[in-house]
Image (cartoon, rainbow, N blue to C red; front, side, top):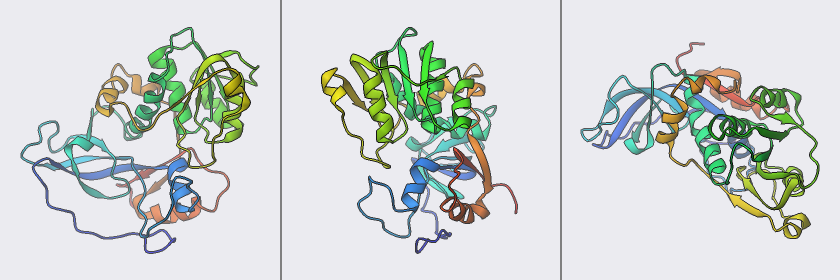
Length: 298
């Protein structure tokens, strides 16, 4: 795009290096929480916006060719990568994650944020008996609940979420929707990006407890409350994934991928992607995620 109006750019691909992989995109995703604030120039983590602005980081595709030094994938394999809204890309092999053929594109596209959520969970000292409160049931919040349930086997997962439809998805994953009492949780995870929720977590965690902040600070400034000091809480930051390939081994084994929540509430094609972004910037009722089908004709 040459301005704030969504559009398309046509560019030549760079030559294939010995450590590179040529990928044809089959599907992608719009990350509502990350991308829309950038398009609307409301991302608090950005100090300036340079156009053309390219967003996106969730891509699923087929390997067309590999460089001479690449051994982890071969032509015909399916992979997930981070290059965003492109119909083809040349990417370093370090930036591709192999995906088994039995995993659907929608399941595969949740790998990146599932791994990001897992990193935050792993930073906390949790057992199955730990009581955990999670705020915000967008993509990262729901994938956090999924990991708490299926990796840590936490029995008490409570959530803060005002939207009934999203709270219901969390309930299907085994969480409870609550109005928490003060100082009753061992740990909490902030996924909403909202100060009101962050303040409520600080009130709800026991003295000397821990809160992991998974939201990336692009919506509102998160500040400490008097409860943080009075209860000597620990605040832990987390960003990006712990190990995407190792996480894929866990997520895509033993039919665990089939337990992922259905987060794609809207679908578009690559040819309609620009108009989809334009529509999303105008609507107050946002889907959790948008699935982008690169093979669909329109």
